[in-house]
Image: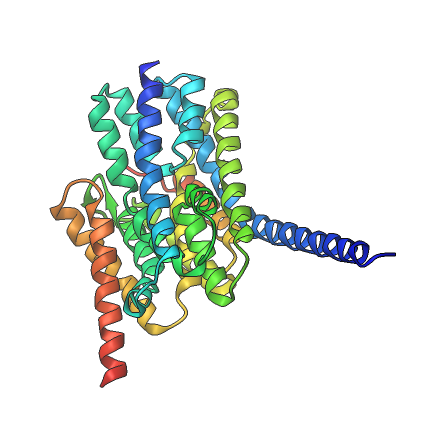
Length: 107
Length: 248
């Protein structure tokens, strides 16, 4: 029961940063410079999320062949650049990750 | 036949067309979200399986997906519950991990002007890394009705809950499923959503810069501050560069 209350609190602190900026900014006037700045947010935030996901393992750099996420990312980038197809990219990525785990098991 | 009757007919027809348009936008949103839905089903199944192993009950696991709806933070929280960490630590960590949505929420605002408060309350609920990236791409191409975003956001939400339920109820039936690298669905989605955004060279530079800063700051800072700071720095440098180029 206590866990459920923690989960509800988790939901509250997650929801406010999602809804408040949208509700406040969309109703007021947004300065031109800020709109230009916001244009870079999607790319920047995705790259900032992705880089540690692919290059770090347990908090340290891992550029070895046992870093399956980094290896599986290569076909994902190729398919994404070629097709811009989200579904195909995720499918190729999962297959690549499963094949790597099966045939090139890490240490 | 009086004037009022004709007017009534006309408004009824208008209302019907409007309703049809809304339904079409909603459906377009849902169909754009199908790839995200499939990715979410896979990831949420992995979460459902993992949360069970971390000692959460079926109800708690599903409640977390319904109430929190934020993938990475749910995996982290399940691990923290398993390690019996204090409620304050779990809640604060969740807050910090999900604080990056502030930037996404702000970034969607210019596309959604002049709506009623309840629309913002509902649209904000469904902002995730993936729905945000998809909506940014679509709304940048042309303005769309906000019902399109209801479609993408709530289709993704439904898939997240469905995947959790499948994972938590049936995950144990398939032996060895917890060994599969299903978590790779997340970076795979990021990769494609990122590539879809890279429409000019300055955006590419901003992405490379943000990735590098995120790695660097991640070595120096606790929690997820590296994501937020790298995004702010990179967007500031890129937009500053753009302004400097256009004025000079």
